[in-house]
Length: 108
Length: 119
Image 1: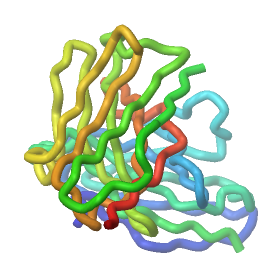
Image 2: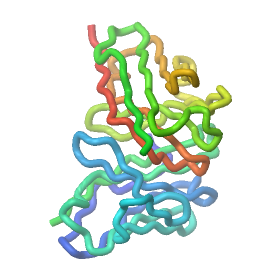
Image 3: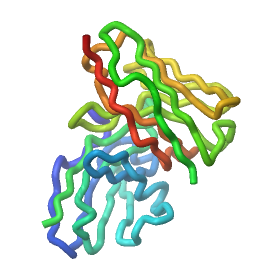
Image 4: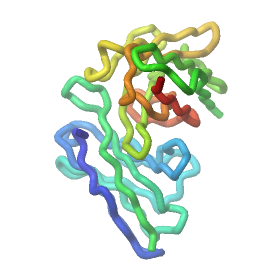
C-alpha cells in the first residue's frame, strides 16, 4: 500500500479546471513532485519542489501544498492531458521516496 | 539532453537474479548533483521505488526489497546497474532507470524495459 493517497480516478470536461490531490503525513515536511504517464510511455515530470514546471511543460499545470495535502491543478484541461498522474515525495519512514497510487484522469 | 537507456534480459527464471544496466548519455553519473535510481511498475499497477546510488557509491534501498537488491555504478562506462536476487513472479514489471535531483524530483527517465519472471 502507498503512504501517499490519491483518488483512483477523476474526470474533467474539456477546457475546465481539475484538481488532483495527494495526501500523506510526509507532505507536512516535504514538497510533492507530480508525474504524467500515458499508456505505454515512461512517466514525465510535470511539477516539482514548491511549484516548478520543467522546461516544455505547459503553464496550465500548477502545484500547491496545504498541510498534509498536495494538489496538481490543470487549468483548461486538454484532450492530451488524459493520462495517469502520480505524486511522490521524500518520506521519513525509512524510504527516501514514496509514490501515490496514481490517479487516472479522463477528459470528457 | 540527458538520456537513459535500460538493457538486460527480458525473461528471468524464478529464483534467479535479475540484472539490468542503465547507460547514461548527455550527463555524467559522476555528477554530485543527482541520485541514479531504479523504479519499477508491475503491469497495470503503480510505481515502486527500488533504490538509488550516489556517485560516491553510497546507496539507499527500499526496505521491502533491501535484502535482495544491489545497485552499483561504473563511472568509466557512465552506467549504473541493478541486481535483484531470488526473483518471483511478483517481480515481473517494467523497470525504469531514472535520474533524481537532490530535492527528489525524478527528472529524466529511461523508456523502461519489461522483465518477466517465468520458467
